[in-house]
Amino acid sequence: MQSKEHLYKLLVIGDLGVGKTSIIKRYVHQNFSPHYRATIGVDFALKVLSWDAETVVRLQLWDIAGQERFGNMTRVYYREAMGAFIVFDVTRPATFEAVTKWKEDLDSKLVLPNGKPVPTVLLANKCDQGIDVLMNNGIKMDQFCKDNGFVGWFETSAKENININEASRCLVKHIIASE
Ligand code: GDP
Ligand code: MG
Image 1 (cartoon, helix red, strand yellow):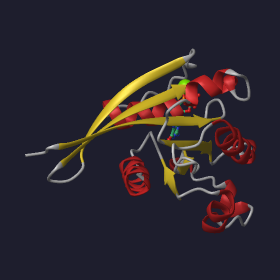
Image 2: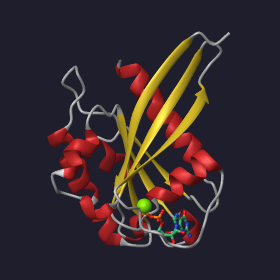
Image 3: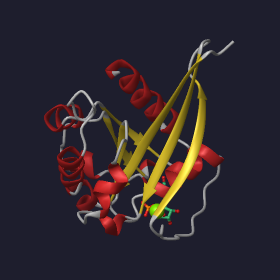
Image 4: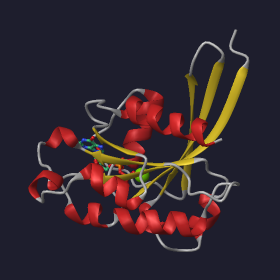
């Protein structure tokens, strides 16, 4: 019987149009839509994971509209989160450049009860598009993650359902380890 339960609030942040809403939809509802609909305010979705034989993990995924970037809204939105995904679009270099700004915004407004930054995983989304700004710019992602405090990174596709489950398990593993 699964007797242990965890509830974690996870943030999904990054520039407008990178695929935040699509990733959550794919992960939670197993579907994808090519039609763009901007998220207004904040959306929530719940994903229940059978973590191991004893443990159930409930993930409360918070999806924010990209415009709210460095406003005061993010502070309220970040409150009590236990982990985060920062998403960029591999076809748009500017969204990768924004990644460090998102990380700084997050770390400046939120720390864990133990004073440490929240575990954050970087998602290089739309990898199905075959255009890779990272490769083209010779950016070494493992080093980038080390330098910028990410616990890991994944190439993802909400469209083709690539690596989203893996990225989530990586984040949850780090959250559990940090508790
Ligand atoms: P958000 O603003 O970050 O929430 O971005 P959305 O989830 O609304 O996605 C923006 C656009 O990118 C939409 O037209 C999606 O269909 C498209 N999109 C999202 N993820 C992917 C992906 O993995 N691959 C491709 N090809 N398109 C994607
Ligand atoms: Mg959205």
